[in-house]
View 1 (tube, protein in one colour):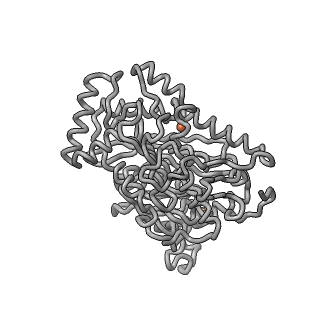
View 2: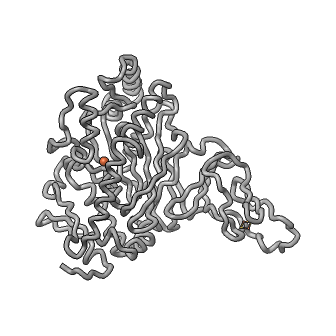
Length: 437
Ligand code: FES
Ligand SMILES: [Fe+2]
């Protein structure tokens, strides 16, 4: 094997040998600054990236500001009701015109020299305006710049820095069905809950995308959580150990989902009761299920209420619909360091007791202080430390279940979801091509 690879991912980064059932990723893909530079150029500058949820800018004047794909972004709903996605960079010298993470504003006044922009991005005022010639902003070139493309699907707002990118709907491919499912929990729609969680990991960003739908690690990494559930609920089957439990689907364009029906030992706020929960919660959750059957039919309602789904949208969006419904996105600042933001998503019309259950359930498992996330973080950082052993141990193995991956139901514990990600990663980096149909 070439120990001194160049930067052609076809030749060195991924071994995808279907005939032998062997799939390996070179660990240099997790540590090399030049790889990160290629990812920035050919993935983050070309793919649709999650910005936020429409509910975060539900009414005119609402805004959020955050980094997306490494750039400062401002999303708002203007007085006309339109959702805008701007670069949060003043057209004068570049300062961020919005310094709050969320709020309500009809204008954005740059704190550096005081230029004022309307909520539609138009430059409204410059101090001492007589100092400027009429030509200076004749064609609105000093208005806030919109990102090249933005669009939303089922309430999830995305942007693309590539003006020539394919449509969001085409890009999402089979993931559309699962974003729609996430949007259907509430009769009156969905809302992002107030507040968010921001944390970081001393690891490569791709490790979290791999981890987020990895059924293989659950029984071992999260053994303490399953012990806790067992002590609380009584006997819990070791479901993850059973080959064939749940399935994974390749959703196209690097997206995938792992899913199961009534296959996990935890309860769901939409809507699966656990014996340790009160009888009144049982009635409320069964009522949610019944009303959803009236709205969506038996099959879809039961899949939403009693199923679990981990949706991966390439490159860096995860929608976990398990112990709670959460949105996670992340971005690398260095090959071995990335930042994560997470939000809870809930039915707008959720009863207070169920909302309380949701919040507790979210924190218990997925929150950064919960039973799952700290264990996962430790494993990601442990892997990253292991990559210092390159020169002797150079390859990650992702071969599990490869021989049967084209079968009807690839198992949840197999590694098809990772291979789906890496195949897309490889194709985008290999040719530097646009994400076009
Ligand atoms: S940088 Fe914004 S007004 Fe000068
Ligand atoms: Fe995990």
